[in-house]
Amino acid sequence: MATLGLRFTFLHTGETADAILRMDDAPVTCQSLWNRLPVAGVCHHASYSGSEGVLILPDPLRIAPENATHEVTQGDIGFTWFAPGDAYGVDREFAEICWFYDWDARPSMHEGPAPVNLFARFVGEPEDFYARCRMMRRSGVTGLLIERRGGPDRGCVVPYRDPADEAPLRPRPAMMDRCLISIASDGDRCRVLWTDKGGLAARIGPDLGPGDNGSVALGLDGAVWAAVGSDRSGPIRILSSRDGGCTWTEIPNLLYGAHPALAIMPDGDLALVYETDRGIVGLRSGDGRAPWREMRTGIEERDATLPVCLPCSDNRLICAFALAEASRPNHLTVIES
Image: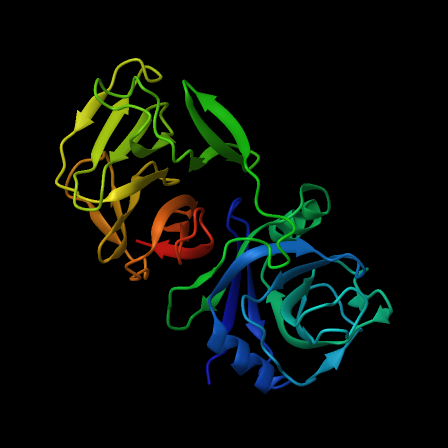
């Protein structure tokens, strides 16, 4: 059997690390987690364990102790599961994938060492990934994707918020005219993460007022892009500005849908995600004109709405959206082109 691998990616800043499964040491744990991948969510830094990062799984997974130990070393990756009352402060069931990025780590809870199932190990050159893990001590929670490397690809939909509902991602706010945009910094650039649902600034086109639903994105070349929708059967208007929003040029298209969300990919392409009667649709274009290339969303729920998106690699977006009549995004998926 070929060696099965994993890839860890920080969704907002792009650092990645590859790992291999330890099938001989923990076959049940490896297979159970492989079947669950990909998973994405909000990860955090451990409180008691030294240099440890943690991703709580969207749904609890119960796996008996296997290759379990609290003696770990840099690069080890583990799994553990807790029932309510197993340790101080644990009031509900949860399972987590944890990884140890420096030599001082020892998996622990308040009461002391807590064994984890060691099922994988980082390989290659994960130093940049480790550095981002260390930054979580000060910067706080961030988005993380764990996916299969060298196996079949699947889409994933997971909660957007911290499972403990204590630390939702909070991007920095910025103003463009009367349009509030929240921008998340990745250390080098800023990317549009969220556009207020109240609408775009009044001067985006002569007949587009605050009642329109839309999105704004800042291009790598300084251009400002806007997409404005009406309802799911109505047209989507795409506009661009080269003077900071003073004048706008409309780009002809034949797209129909609501709540369009724009993002600029790392290579400069324009990505557009919007809701339709058949689910969330994702498209990509080099200049906002046809032909648009389809992106695989995997979001076929007819009640999926209010998408927002953020690029995390040359061909991948992280997309948050709302389900079950939620008034704000409460789920997340990964979209690929």
